[in-house]
Image (cartoon, rainbow, N blue to C red; front, side, top):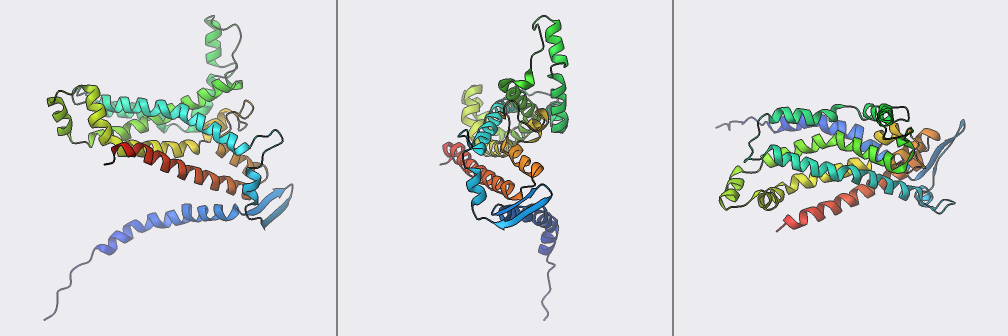
Length: 307
């Protein structure tokens, strides 16, 4: 008696996910391997001549962490700039997004028109960062509308150099990052809150918990996985910050490189001398820093909610 053959659909699953793996290998994995490879070679242009590739081992990394004549280590300085710019934008971004997410999904308030609010707060995320930066550059330039408005109202006697002072430049960069990304963060957190079983909130209300108690005892612990994911992805994006400060400061990190980020530092090597070795070394260091900070943030934020 012949056995009846069943139809196997498992192969179709592999076929459907195959485009992702092909794209990942071609456009992500191979470039990553190439970057690690280049980090151990001297490979740059000197005028019209090409130097290398010559194997130098950890020479690029040693050069990267060698102090300059003034005693400062550039990559550490730019890492500090990057973290300051990220924190100034990310902390209010997460706090405001969390507040809005709780507000819009509140069972007690039962607000109408959530789709409209989602669309409005997400709209800044659709604007290209370079266009956003050019807008702010125009608004806050010495002859821009903001200075003209402040002088015409009598608040200033002469134009204020927003783009020539450290604190205003850092605040503008952080403000732009906040405006571009808080909508995306809000929608992620709203989705996380809406995924919580509504009976949990009803039980808290029956037990007499107020809004703050419900938030800290019910919402926040159950939202922790989404919140941790949001903070880690925001941190990785912050470490890769490039387009906003690049356009706003014309790639110079003005004033005195106080707004120069790590990726801007990397880009300078690629633009000026096509130094793939040093650029690769910076990329590897950035990868290691991102991995370490992600692990620290993950274990720190998720530890209070682990049993």
